[in-house]
Figure 1 (cartoon, one colour):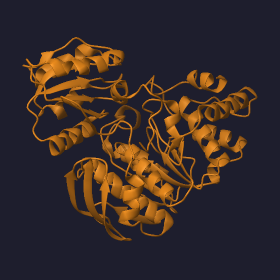
Figure 2 (cartoon, one colour; figure 1 turned 30 degrees about the vertical axis):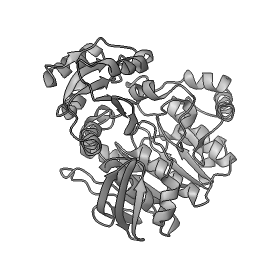
Figure 3 (cartoon, helix red, strand yellow; figure 1 turned 180 degrees about the horizontal axis):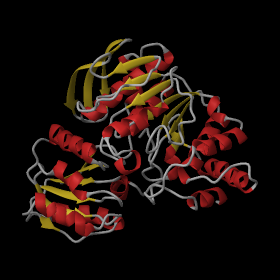
Figure 4 (cartoon, helix red, strand yellow; figure 1 turned 60 degrees about the horizontal axis):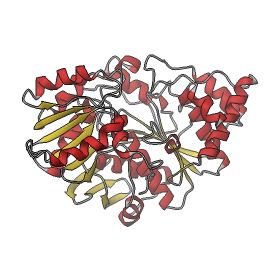
Length: 429
């Protein structure tokens, strides 16, 4: 299809991390030529280092369950490009997306739109689709940054800051303070800000805004209890206290649910009852998030791709499965990632087998780092993504190693190699 082919030809940060930001004037000009579609819907803008995808998905699910026509724009995708743009949690049709992209390509040829990156083109297409499909509220996940991000054309009523961590320091750092300022650059004086837990060492003044809710202060979590298939959390926002079951594990997911609830309640000005939330989140999936996939040995996937995400994965794994005695660790890192930053956070795991996945970072560097943390582990030959499912199936016969769990992690691409193959992943499964 012309539009998708044109999109694939554009500069893409996900493939080339040396690319920088383009001035926002470019996408503003493109959207103006489209009739300013971003002004036709209300918006929740989600920024942060980790947790954006789960917060965005849960906020969209809550709004859809409340009867709103909801657009969700997120990145990156796991299995299929159309996962990035959904309406009422369903990925848009490929033909519709291609038509929008074809229109943008023709506008560019005609001089009505400037040169765009892959992300800018998708952002413009998403907002145009939302306007054309009658979306009432859009939940928009920022890309890499905030202030210079292409999504910062919204006049969002609510901004959610999920977390601040050591990711993209070369592009928006070099300090965590710089990262925070970049991400908070989307906040206007008229916006309400919902803020997750931030590093204690981070000393930054939050921008002037209409209202501020912070997890641990204005929003509190009194308890959470892990169970089969998820966890029960009890929390309170300015709209009241409630108990909600979410089909996700770990503290990051619990905080994400609280942030999503707070964002939706702040936007609408009313509380969301626990029963309503239970129904909204019952079957939801967050592609790339922590998942226990079952099997023997049990298979766990998590796209943790930076220091903080790996640390959270280590803790969540212990909460859900206890102290595993023998883990087969499958690691696939994309270009630009430093293996030691991630593997050091997983070093407390009892890894008996390491399987490098060749998807970007030289597998030799992954092996070298792994030997520092698990010198007794068996190192298997690196495989391509196409061989991952077969390799995992083989662990069921490894009686000599006694592997009791397989952990696939390091990137979305690593998880995609395991989970994809039958079309796009839907947010409601």
